[in-house]
Image (cartoon, rainbow, N blue to C red; front, side, top):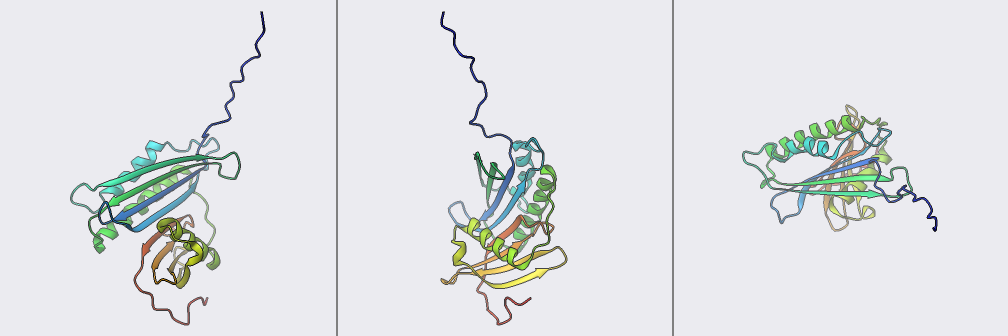
Length: 217
């Protein structure tokens, strides 16, 4: 009888434990329109086994955002993407995208939405192990602002230049007004959740009046 080698039960192809959680929450006026605002959160998962959270728990934290400030249930789009590489500092990533149809961009709706997102993002930060965040310097803030606008609205980061900027010492966040040579405007708040550098809010901006003081400390 021919002897067969023992089967190797180890499996190379696996998603493994999540090491990085990326969440995007967008708002649009109608199902077919483009988003007018996006909120982004990148979180390292600090649990050594990558099991600091369950995907269903993430969704339950995000759920109150959908109808925040609304009198009737809103339509939404929910997307999830899982990725794993055999290299890198964060080889296993989970991306969750939530797009909410608000029907209006009135100030009270935007305020209620922002408040709900901040609460949810804080809960996610606690769930994954609240990350430490170093104070944001100007160069890092501008770099993150370009990257966030590019991620939120599919524009080339190199095509964006800062027209306005403001540091908020109270929470360590930065507000950056970006524009393109074609005249498109983007308002970015880096660190909008308690100054955490991995949080960003990006919206289409109004025309920016550029002054000579821009870029000064």
